[in-house]
Image 1 (spheres, rainbow, N blue to C red):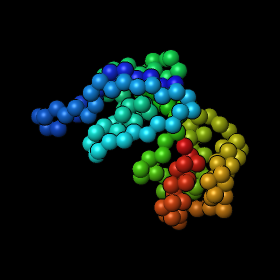
Image 2: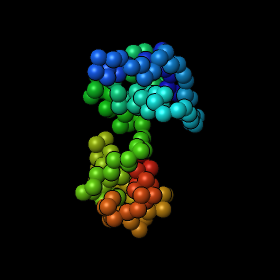
Image 3: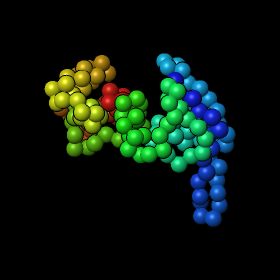
Length: 154
């Protein structure tokens, strides 16, 4: 469960301060699907970056399963790696890595041994219909295939 209270975020654009978020509250229960809707510039991506521990510069309170979000980057990275999966708009695949290596990389960061990394990554790629493309690099995959690699990695 993610709970957030009074989340606020401001950006400095030159001498002007722009409020990206103002007093946002919410609760997302485990297994619940949530859609953030709003016009461009309304703070959707900013909120997701804060909730996903990608942006640590905000005001307000956040908790994951009743435990306050850390404000220290290394602690946040550890929680992020173990509790969140991301599919970015630009996929952020590593161009010199194969699909299998891209999917296995977060497992490597979490200390999973190499045989388990490869086994889990291959299984996830098969689940998204890319079992025959595990040795392809991103530039040899279509946009849709790259998106599925990102989904498998998440």
